[in-house]
Amino acid sequence: MTIVVKLLFVLRLVFKQAALCDLLELRMICFYLFCFFPLQVLPQEETLDAIKVEADRSLKVLKEQPIPAYYISYRVQVKENYSIISRFGKLQSRNQQRESYYNLTVRVGSNEMDNTRKIEGNYFTFDQNGRAPIEYKPFALKMILWEATNKAYMSAIQKYECVKAISTISSDRAKSGDFTRETPDQYYEEPISFDGLKFDTQKWEEKVKIYSLVFGNNKDLVDGTATLNVELIRKYFVDTDGAVIAQNSIAYRLLLTTKTIADDGMELPVYKSYFGMEEKHLPSDTVVIGDAQQISILASRLKNAPVAASYSGPAILSPKVSAVFFHEILGHRIEGSRLKQETDAQTFKDKLGEKVLSEEISVIYEPQLKEYEGIPLSGNYVFDDEGVRGQQVNIIENGILKSFLMSRIPIDGFQKSNGHGRGDIFRNTETRQSNMIIKSSHLLQEKELRKMLIDEIKRSGNEYGYLFDEVIGGFTNTERTLPNAFNVTPLVVYRIYANERPDELVRGVNLIGTPLTMLSQIVACGSRYDIFNGYCDAPSGMLPVSCVAPSLFIKKIETQKKSIPFSNPPLLERPL
Image (cartoon, rainbow, N blue to C red; front, side, top):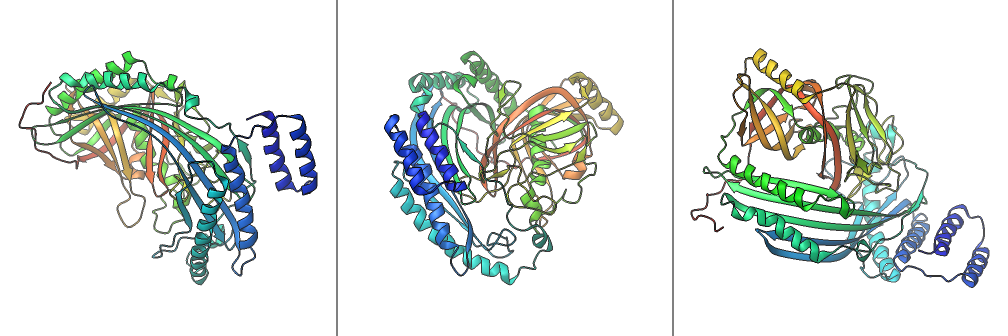
């Protein structure tokens, strides 16, 4: 974008929001700019202007209705994606696509009480979403938003009537209201095209074939795949409070996948993934091939490993397992919008100012942090999906609960968002996690953690403890209707024996527990840190998140046998 277009963009925002001049004055300024500078309007930015015009036009009409709208927001997302999949050294697929979607919300009533209030047993939808034009045609986009806004408003007034009828259903709702008041912000990033990334597709097709070829000569494997996915997303957000946001999201993800089947039919996948915001963040061929060889060997070892029995006792969690552990056990329970739901267990709602972890541990969220010690973080962003700048939040300081993650859904005592209102383009926004960082003021060497584990095995009378080394993910339940528990799904688990017997690889283990009990069992943090870059699936959709965490020694954990698909082992030996 030329400097003139940037200036025009700023002028539009200033004049429309502050009303500092009339239309004639604006036209005169634009006339002189056109006369003295060559103007090259990028077509994509017509999208931003079209969204803003339509939002303001719609609210002007709808706020004059018998049941007035007081707020409208539009999100438009243009995504370009390129993926390559290779299996056992041969290209399976290549796919490049471009798609665009919109999401809008219409709120009627007021910030104190509106149609978005959740009512148990009622399932109104108050947003609209769908496909948007992939060509930059402002009129086509306006037509789609016009039609969707009408539908959203009609749905909103029906829901609002129900809200008013049972407005005393929650005293907390009455105290905190339904939507925070925020100072609108304007933010603009230059658009980036897929061509601008200078991504060499032919080079990477050869690379992924080489990576997956490593799995070709291991007859134990029923799958050996390398996948590269490059995703470029252009996000627009406009609301009638005055927020105007245009930002980019770029992700390079490389995934190695293997799978074997044990003689008893248990399917055993092993993964290795890499993330970057630039191509240079991905590792070298030497590193990837070496990792592919390691997980191939590991898959064969898992095939012949014994199945673990249920267990209760001490354990060490590697940094990546620790990251998923904290994400599930703590992260979802400090998301502010959950604490407003009467069906939620609200584990930490009344624990502000109380000790919930060891005084050595602090928990921080930093959504704008792009890297941690040179490693990219996939949970980073500048503005959330409600147009609020992502802010650092000190959740736990020296073991004491200090705050919650907040979207524009207020709770008692927290009337401002801290930039954690997130949702994929098909869902309503809710409070969600970003970049979680676990810090400890007292870090132990890994050998010290192992000694603590051995000592606790002996003291507790167990034959062995556990080392959870690799993880695929986890899930948790925060509602009252079911046990308020979590489940972490490890991939690689070792038994650690107290009698100097060699460590033993086992399979079929799930790490389970309840939050308050498990947090109280954390004894020490190790000096080894790592990062888990993954996706989190929750009511507002699948979103990228990160967690930076140290290894942990936990005095007492519980495991159960894993519930996973079973298959008949192949009757025929796999071709090499």
